[in-house]
Amino acid sequence: MTAETIDIQYEDLSHLEVVEALLDEAFGPGRFARTAYRLREGTVPVPELSFVAVQGERPIGAVRLSPITIGDADALFLGPLVVHPDCKNRGYGLALMNRALEAARAGGHRLVVLVGDAPYYARAGFKPIPPGQVTLPGPVDPNRLLALELVEGALSGVSGMARPAPGDETGSAAFAVPGKPEGAEQQGKAEQAG
Ligand SMILES: CC(C)(COP(=O)(O)OP(=O)(O)OC[C@H]1O[C@@H](n2cnc3c(N)ncnc32)[C@H](O)[C@@H]1OP(=O)(O)O)[C@@H](O)C(=O)NCCC(=O)NCCS
Image (cartoon, rainbow, N blue to C red):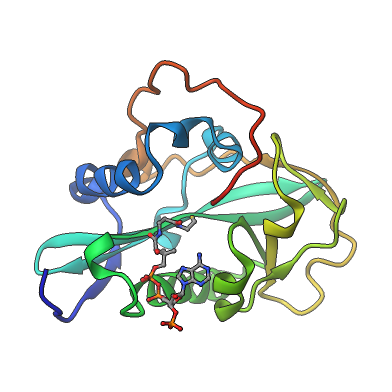
């Protein structure tokens, strides 16, 4: 794939097949058993906060933000974030993430959490959540549970179990999830990436 300008657009139904293929390639069929997937499973990504990076007409990366609650506080969960293997290290992942975070900030959201590699997500301002403050519905390496305060102090006083929040079904058709493969219920292995 040659280097080419990318365009960041809202994700819609026309992108779904290619984005799902990117996710399959990056995370494999086991992605349906991951803790992050289980957290997202009961909700739908926010269409205004979910983007694709398009090269020519082909999506080469995507990011989604989904509504969750932590205790009784509203928050967003970032993930998946994916970039095609041939397009890595060109800043597309960070550009996608920053676009989604800017949209979240503009939309009045206060807090974003994710499961991922701290050194990478620190580039967008994410920091580790103090151990024990937030729990997820499955095993997660605490060093990989990260938060970004879109509003200063948004994490303080927020604690408890992160759960999916009912999403706005309007416009959510783009995020219909294909059938889970056999064995998707396996659990127990600490999540390695969001
Ligand atoms: C993680 C991912 C989205 C990064 O996308 P990308 O477009 O290559 O990232 P960027 O171009 O914005 O950033 C590249 C930089 O981040 C670094 N980086 C990438 N992944 C990293 C990681 N997991 N940990 C630390 N640094 C990382 C690269 O070494 C590079 O560093 P440099 O700028 O010093 O050369 C992409 O590698 C990917 O899709 N991976 C598979 C799926 C995945 O793991 N997603 C994240 C969990 S949801």
